[in-house]
Image (cartoon, rainbow over all chains, first blue to last red; front, side, top):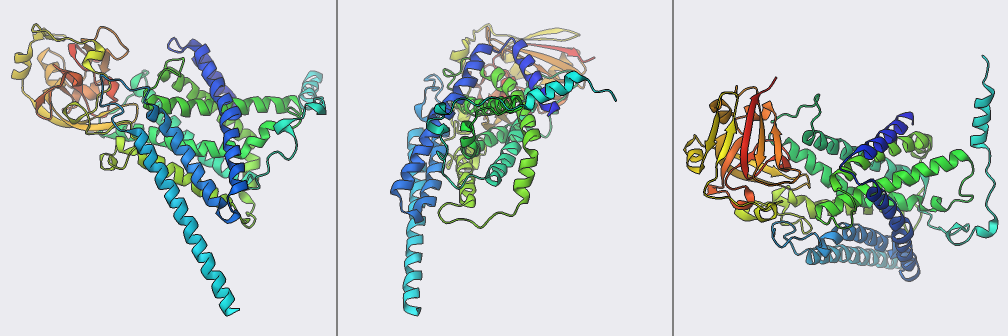
Length: 136
Length: 399
């Protein structure tokens, strides 16, 4: 713990004396990402989770939640690329791909997989219950 | 032993219960029973926490290495072999950071109810610990968000110079993480030692961990093609394609962007302890030419291999009267300004026969965006140090 405090001290002193670092800008960003995550992003995640809890049949919830988690993570990574605001028309070799289409393909893949998992489980369940009815 | 009366008093003050805020303020998410997921558990949080600590550890070590290579202190030396070492460490840095996105998300979800614990601060120690956690969370988010923005080359949302901010906050993450581990280690030990209860119906801890792993894997496959060429076709979200660009190689800074114009009077000035040469293109082409397959490895995590042809830097060192085996070279670009206008080539790199002043790429005269008329290309070196549009090389014998 003491070593951690020392490292934090080193970070703070290093940041304060770094001529390349705009300290107020970095602090604003530090606070900004914390607030954006805790007050905006996570409440949205919880809201989606609650909707899944209300509208998705209990047996399918785990699959739907897992697919939603993967979708959210992939979308977050892809978003700055999809928006493409870092593109420079003078340098087409940077960000050369159609990222909107790429993201759509990945999301499609995620949800087709989820749907397949749900269908497979339902079929299995039906087989199991008919077998039980027959044997029982 | 005589106890100082003051010390005991301070300690007691630190752990004395603080007055709780009035209960009428306990509204919204602070109400009991707001967070009902039974999936949250110390065991889940501990498992995610251990994985996250490892991921941040990998990013810190590889990132610090990249920083040291670019700003070497006196005690630090970076070899020229293995040729592709930096390509691996920096590829791992960016890939690990990207794969950490779902991991950090799940970890923060698992502890989110604690943000609304009541009373908000039980004791002064508790308040300090919560401040430390806030610092850790903010710093961890800072690293991932700024890293993702950087590889997408979107700098507008960051009101600071990315490289400096990402480096300084990395130390903040490590410090806050060490404190956090110090505080939580007993809880983690207990949570991981206890046998897990049987999985409940609906959602299980394993299915959540599986989803996190699947997300990390998908993100990796979707981006790693920017440095692992065979994956390029699968990497729909790769910020670069290794074969896409002028002369089949990506570019970070274009000649137009750097304000370069090369006139007919171009000379590469090479200065050494013995003499000074002003070489025009014909003179450069008349020197012995060598070919090497070397990669441009960007700090942003992409890399691409090219076949470069040009003059060995060690030959130039010999020509101007320096000892090729222990010379250090300072290379300068035609660029008027910019952080990467000059770079220093350490003796291990000058000595290496693969280090070239390249005039050609894939057999063609260098494209302006690749540094025409001449650029430095050396093994195991970050792309920003492979100076383009060379105007001057100063070589001296290393002490």
